[in-house]
Image (cartoon, rainbow, N blue to C red):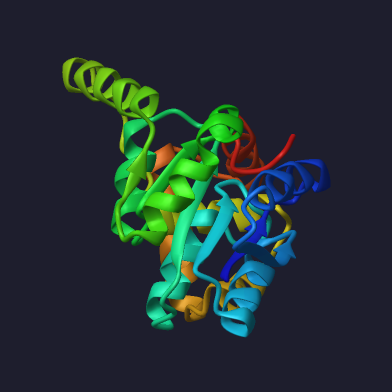
Length: 211
């Protein structure tokens, strides 16, 4: 029996994913999480074969979940579901140890195939996503502007936008206060911002948090 954990902060999405997963008699949903911290805790508790996690999760986004599981040596494949379409996100996902990447709009038709691939030790990226990433890459090569935030800086900005203090962020991401402050300052410098309100607006614009 293959165990699957589903992590998304919307119940209707979790229900839809569960319904798809449970069409396979030898697969079982071993837990559901509503934020990144719960996803990591469930993975440690149930040791699933695959964790399906939404990229835009509260407390800890999908990439941070993958990074944490990798650091804890949890032998679980991560499948990121996202509505975001950009080449930088896929690059950061691969660096975080993610081997499965799927648009939410493709989940109904491709979720089973994606899980099967991961269970077989193969990566899975939809052809539509790869075409989009190739197009974005070529476009960005021609017209690249601004400095991009690293995934860790994005995690810090997300938590700031959710109202967390530096101390709280330090606890959630398992980083020192000094490191959090460094990431915060670096993000503000790259974005040319000078206030928390501007960081919040950036996070909303980039869909790191819900408006």
